[in-house]
Image 1 (cartoon, helix red, strand yellow):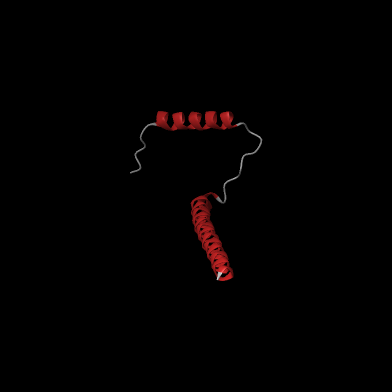
Image 2: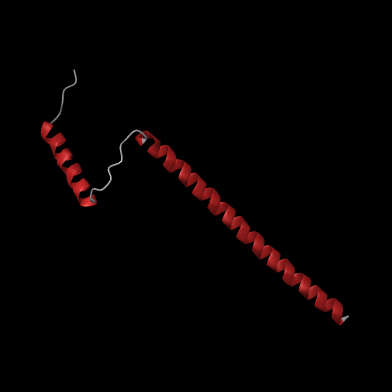
Length: 83
């Protein structure tokens, strides 16, 4: 009787371990799917820039300064009538 009860307890512990492992596997699968979808979205978003040359060796502050300078130039041009 005691052996049967001990075996039952072992079975219950193993089933709990299996359930815990299945939950971790499901969570990992969901995270993998989430990351795959996010990556696909990023690839789609950045595909429009596939022909843009990447500027290397320039400090971020310098790039931001150039962007600001060009934005000011566009504002100074004013509205353009395209008729």
